[in-house]
Image (cartoon, rainbow, N blue to C red):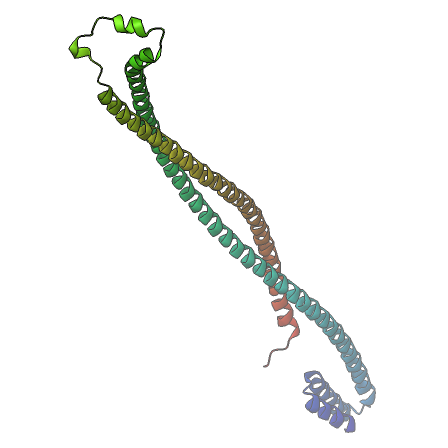
Amino acid sequence: SEVLTIVKRLAKDHHSAALAQLASRIAAVAKLGAVTGEDPFAKVKGLLKDMISKLQSEAQEEAEEKAYCDEQMSKTEAKKSELEEDVSKLVAKIDTATSKSAELKEQVKELESELAALAKEQAELDKIRGEEHGDYETAKADLELGLDGVRKALGVLRDYYGAGAALLQDSTNFEAFMQQPAMPEKHTKAGGAGASIIGILEVCESDFAKNLAKEDGEESDSQSDYDKVTQENKVTKTTKEQDVKYKTQELKSLDTTLAELSSDKATTGDELAAVLEYYGKVKDRCIAKPE
């Protein structure tokens, strides 16, 4: 009776179905003993020993289950945190590489635009320089032709108007000169008019020479300016082309890096998904749900 009361109280206090069942069996044995007159203590003792053994076994299983759950929850949560951190780092690296790639592409695009503008500018300079040089060659030929003509005319006139004076000044030929028959009136040398013509031609000669020198000077200055700008454009073009080359190489390297990072992220993401699936199963098994 006292044992039955204790077992019932324990079953109630611990909400144990097994103890409640044990109490029922003890009560049944006690009733049977009262009817048959047999001592129920031996059977009750056996029931208690069986229950204790069962409870010990269950306690051992629960302890092992708890140890298993604690270990698996700890390991899984650690692996989950590790993989989540890895994914986060990979995403950050991918974002940085993507941003750098976009920046480099914009820089290459701008450089190529500048190179196109520079090529257009140089082509325009070449065209203008060619036209200027052609104009110079034409003007130079005209001036040289005019200058040559004026100088030839001056030579003829100087020879013509200077011959009489030379004969008069030569005492050896003076008498011979005096004995020459008179020239027709239409061939009479007009010394004053000759000097005037020569003077005009000399002015023309000077103008032609000055204009020719001016054309030469302007051509030299234009060519010098053209050569200077062309050289500067060549240096700029080379620099920008090298920038495009190196930035394009960097872009290719970044594309390779991005591909590798994306692959690593996909692999890590798959591993994380598997860990999360397993984590869910462990929680279902190890975390008691409220009834």
